[in-house]
Every structure is written in C-alpha cells, then in structure tokens.
Length: 264
Length: 279
Image (cartoon, rainbow over all chains, first blue to last red):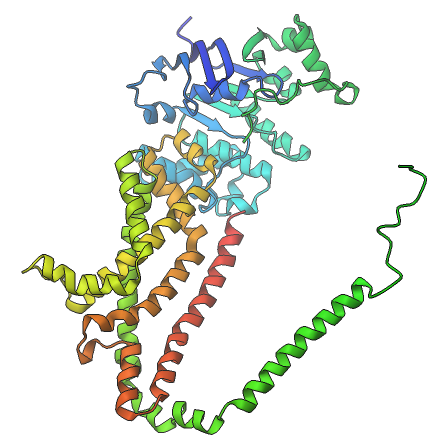
C-alpha cells in the first residue's frame, strides 16, 4: 500500500496548561473517509485544525500527501492549497458574491485567469447543486446553501484531501440533509475526507472508518459497524448512548465542556 | 420567610403618584422648558439688527459665483488631498500597529499619541514654518496645496489609523482562517479579504473624519494664502471685513452645510446597503 494521504504521529497540543491532545497517531489512506466523533472538549476539532496547521502542534508530526506540514521550513500556503477546509460557521466572504467567493481564491492563490476560474467555479457550483445562486450574496442564502458554497469554494482549489469541522452543527435540522448529500457524493467520487461530526447516520453509512476521541486521545478506531455498532470501550458506549438518546441521559458532574476551545 | 404570604412589594402603590402619572408629568415638563426657551429666544433677539448684519441680500449676491467656484472648490480640494494623504498614511500606521515586529508597533503608537494630542493648528504652523526652516532649500511640492495635504494628512492619519485598526480587528477571526486555509499568504489575505470588509465596517467613522477635515481645512489661513488659494472661511472673513457686514460669514457657513449634510445622507444610504450585503 502506498503512503497514507494524512499521517499524524505522536501529536500533542496544549493551550497554556490545558493539554488538549495527548499523543495522537492516525493514518488516513487515499480515498478513505474517516469520521472523528467524541464529546465536546475531546480535542477532535483541534486535531483537525492541526492537520492544516490552523493550530500549531506543540509536539509531534503531521504529513499530508507525503509532505511534512509541521516542518518549520515548509511552504504552508502551498500545502494548504491541497487541503480543503470546511468550517462549522461556513466563513464565506460576505463582501463577495457566490461566484466571486469561488473565483477570487483561484485567481489570487493559484493564478488562474478569469475565464478558467469562472469555468471551475461554475463546475463546482453545479456539483453542489447551486448554479442558480451564482450571483447571490452569502447573506441571502440559507445556512445549508452557504455551507454547500463553502464546500464548492474549497473544491475549486482542487484539493487532495478535504477536512470538515462539524459542517452541519450550525444548521437548522431540516437543512442538514442537503449538505450531507453533497459530502456523500464527494466520498463516492473518491475524495479523501476527514470529518469531525455528530451525525451518526452519516458516519455509519458513509465513513470507511470511525475514530472515537475522548480526553485528548483516540479511544477507539475501527469500522463504523464496530465503533458505533458494537463499541468495545465503556467510554464509547457511554458517549453513544448519550448522543443517540439524549432524553435518557442523567445529569453528570463536571463532564461537559472540559477542555473547551473547540467551538468559537 | 414563609412562601404562602403574597409579596406586596411589587404591587402598585396606593398613596402618592403612580409611575405612569410621574412619567406623564416629567414629559410635560420637558415640553414646557423647550417652548419657554424658544419664546425667550424669539423675544429677546433683535431681529432687525440680525437681519441687517447677517442677511443682506445684495452682499450675499456679490459673493457669487466666487464663493462656489473659488472658495468652496478650494475647501473641497484641500479636504480631499488631506484625506487621501491621511488615508494612505493611516493605513500604513494601522498595519504597523498590528505588526508582529515590536519597533513598528511602538513607532505607530508614538505617532498616534503625538498627532492625536496636538491641536491641528500647531501642525499647520509646524508644516508652514518649521519644515522650511529645518530643511532649507527644500520645497514641499504643490505649494500651499501640498502643505495643506501634508498638514491635514498628518493630523487625520493618527485618527484614521486607530479607526482602521479597530475595523480590521472587527472582522471575524473565521475570515482570516478561511482565507489562510485556501492558501492565501497573510499579506494576500489582508489585502483581498480582511481590509475590504474592514472598510465596510469603518465607513461611518471615516466619513466623520472627512467632515472634521472639511472644517479643519479652514486652518490653511495660518499658512498664508494668495487670493486664488482662499477657501470658504478665509473668503467669508475677508469679505465680511471689506463690507463691514457678517452676511458673508453666514453664506460661507451655509456652503459648508451644503456639502456636509448630503455627505451624511449618502453615508447612511451606504451603511444600510452594506448592512444588507453582510448577514
């Protein structure tokens, strides 16, 4: 087997005295879809943000496509061009139209000419089913539409891997489906994807592997059927039962919101 | 404390004025003071002399068209040139203030403190007198126009730098993260993504600065100007002393409003448009 597309070795990350990641080892192969699940404050978003160096790891190494991202001399802008990132809060550029959101990065970063950038933009808008919104401004779109534009914007750069940071957590429940459908399509097209999510159905049906994190370490890593279907660890079972049936959960002392710094 | 008793402290009081009555009385009193003040002013002012001193139609008439084609034109020219210099310099200082290089931050901070703390008048005198003295033989290009642009620019840059810095910091952090994760370098992200949004945010305070500059441009008279270089205030004052009448002052004042009032109107329009575009 060739080298994994994403490789994380002995990764540590601290915010001050707060150690959020305590030694993560993870490999994601080409075309693999990996969902990272876990309670808030478990460090899953931080792990994702370490992959494209939005967070600077305290210790350890990260490789993407064979290039060491954590090398101090790496051209991080060049590396990031190959890593698409989708945020919980969409982060579309509000002063630009939908098409401009897609064309400006292509032209400024990749140096594509106007016609080429417009062609790629139209292609990717069609891919997420939003061709008719090409001239709209982000503020006039629903959350689900904005997130699909954000996915198209990342795809227009031609990334090798895509990172999703809770892409549906800020959406109204009825809008989640459209975004997940786009992501499912991407997965079927063979994109390498790392997805931090609470959508268990998506994880079960689309992911090749599910990684359960808690307290800054990977507790369980395996196929969806194994991790979600028949978890081996008590912590995983506990988390899943609370997630799948929140009404049945009991009040616990001091478990929620530990670590923090996960959602802005 | 027993739970069964009803809490009476929040019930309307039986004695004295109710809250509603008090509010009505207070509002009535405010109207009464306003009306009394207007009447007092109308009665005590000497309307005949006021009209004689400030509203002589023939004097006002002889100001035209020069008050527009010369004085207002110069005021606008001085203001705009000062604004452009201030905007460019202010942008540089704002970026220095946000720089990761310590001495730049420090230098920008010192600049802002000095030029915000000094009266604009002193800056004008400094540019008009001290600079030619300190660097003999050098000439500020553009004559009076160049000097005004620099003096007004130096003053306004300090204010605009702080405004621009606040605007840049008001752009949500996610915008920079999105730009960086698309492969923008820090400088590119700043120019293409952050600054355009910052300017939308600071449009109103920047326009305020423009209005302030518009008025500060009257300080040009301390540089000593030729007849052709006079702006509204100097023009009005000169004419007021030759005609021994204050009408030109009033007309000059109206000319200022002629620009500033529509300006604020345009800004309000732009503000609401920008509001529509951003969320």
